[in-house]
Length: 319
Image (cartoon, rainbow, N blue to C red; front, side, top):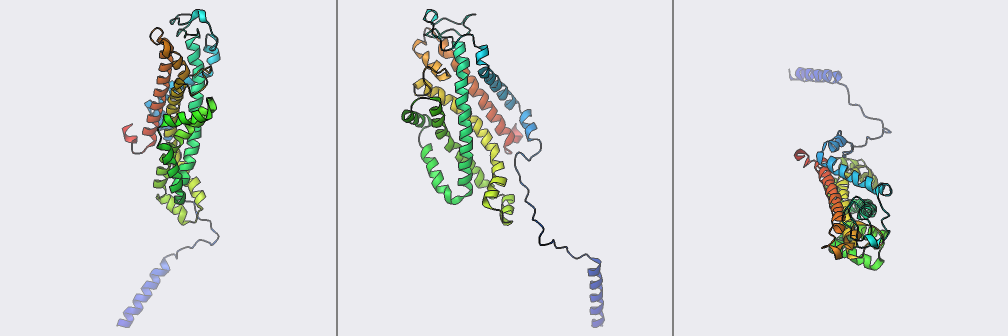
């Protein structure tokens, strides 16, 4: 009886196995699929969310107006900004001089419009250099842990100095000039971007898609570039907008202290500095470039806050 049961069970088991398809094994030369990447750019609707954010729209609109004024400075300015006219010094705002004149008779409106070129050039170039350098340094330090200690100690050493004092020290060594201001500010703000990107990379290294790529035998360089770097672009974009604002303000401070761009070059900092000696009798000389600096910084901070609220998943529900 037991033999028949055993035989019947074996026969039934054989029938069940015959009814099932054996598992298919892929050929040896079949390429393994790349693990799916998760990045801001690959998520649907990310651009629409940015455009729908009112804070981003307001900040971008104000910034575009300032950029348009700087690009069209030769068209909209009413006077040559560097022409001296002692007979018309310290004139208040009027139909001839929209924002008045300074102690040398220069038209303040023309100085502010042309000064926007220098200030925005310094801010934009510093932002680009800081973003490129900070992302590269942070990516290397965060992914290659052997280099992390050395690279981050250098960054900590630079961040130990107050930003403006370090910029003044670098300008004292290199001398005044637009290129030297850009260099000094890039050195000052690159460590901050590098620290942010490093912390982002440290969290991304433990994500499932990165671990899957590593398990498939992908090279570290390919993983860092194809899987980790795309996810660093969102925080780098937000940080870049803030660096833009900081650089414009720092350039104005350096110009006000007389260690930035040369005094004969129109910039917001130089115009503000030129009015400090006549602030009581001609407040408009420093007031209007100061307002332009404030509006530019406000627009960039609005833009940065909006981008952060839109691109950061932890804050997206609040925007």
